[in-house]
Image (cartoon, rainbow, N blue to C red):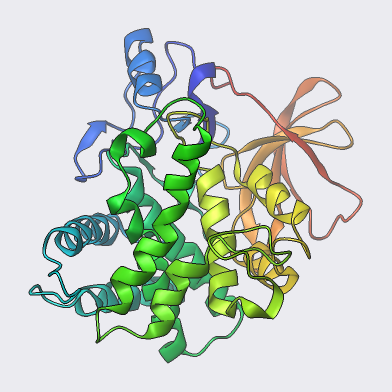
Length: 365
């Protein structure tokens, strides 16, 4: 199957994978022939990409990094616990609820187990979901990326759990930002952006009052918007003043932010998100962390249609472990014509070949 840009779909395309809502209920089933009304519905749900069936690529089956039930349970737990933290905090900052680290540590351990079992490079695009609330989904995605980076950097399990907790809780302070600002479709005013920036302070002060949670977890919330050159917020610290865990979460946070659909901006593809990170190497982001990210994450996910620098066109068919930007390509077109028999090209063995662009996909061939 191959990835299709939803806005480029034409009626008659057949859905390659189920589309879920955040509760795990199927909205549209695999194999369904899409109508114009269905396509318009997908666009209205802010779903930028879907998988469609194609006889030449039906054996290309992207696998999600974690099972759907784990994902759904984790996001639901993040949502309920964030709301509890907001609603059940006492005036002195203490909690009457079960401590959030108890609930979240098991999520982190489950994700680590899944990532250890799955040798595939990490790709969030393997399943298609609608998102009812960005904060909770974003917190889960950032945790996935953060743990993948941490494992690539050989951080030990004890510290990975702390790092994972910091990733889950990094945006908990946004629970105290007015929804009208968080969900505003247009450009924020200067005062509104100042309100947004306060979420780092809110999160830090909230978490540090949970006495069973490491102070380092609170600092992850405090520092994930700080940048190496001091251009970040809330304190404008730089370089080694920023904890290494804060630098890791910063990379994961930015990547998921730019590759997720928002009311005010369409999602970038993974390779475009990586370009954003590379543009900030040494100035905003740590080079070793970005390189670890590149090794752990599928920059060109399976099913993506691409064009090579020699003019050949095809679909990403498989990943090379530890090399997220040099996948296998199934060639479907050369010299402007469809090939009679498709064949595979390994970009890791043909270093003169480069992916020049990703293609808008119309109907399946």
